[in-house]
Image (cartoon, rainbow, N blue to C red):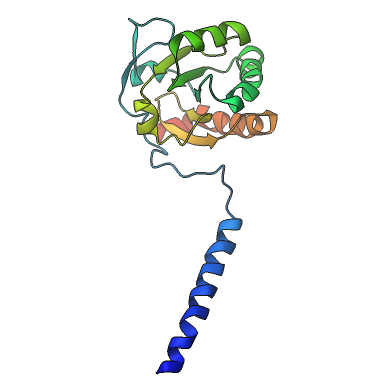
Amino acid sequence: MKRLFLFIPLVVFIALGALFWKGLTLDPSELPTALLNKPVPTFSLPALAAEDGLLTQESLKGKPALLNVWATWCPTCKEEHAQLNKIAREEGVTIYGINYKDERAAANDWLARYSNPYVLNIYDEAGSLGLDLGVYGAPETYVLDANGIIRYRHVGAVDQAVWEQLRSIMKQVSEPSQQEGAG
């Protein structure tokens, strides 16, 4: 019986090694979301540009779009900002913004300085919408279909390679056969 107890550390070591090995094979940018194929959570928050203008989840419906979580305190957000401007300007993609846990004046100044790719910008000062979305941190970008259903989530900066992937997903959600099964 005592000999069996000698093998317990070995079994624990092998199990931990297997878990570690599995963890090395995972892509950290592919974080799961419980909201995949579900609507953007219900919210009522002010627009970044105007304190008195309230936006809701209904504001995000109408056509496929990107929903980008960003902040001025986020260095990676600044890295991806030129790419977002290019996507909006050259490809005509609708991009909605969620200004996450930021200061309104700083965010408006930042957009004036670096250009504004967003059709509308939700001011999420307390991070409540970010919490409901399961945001780990900025930047995060979601692909929404025309009904405001989350079809994909990307954690991290949107660069040209990521945009190619997002473009492909947006094309899929734009097709009528995809829309009929939504909801």
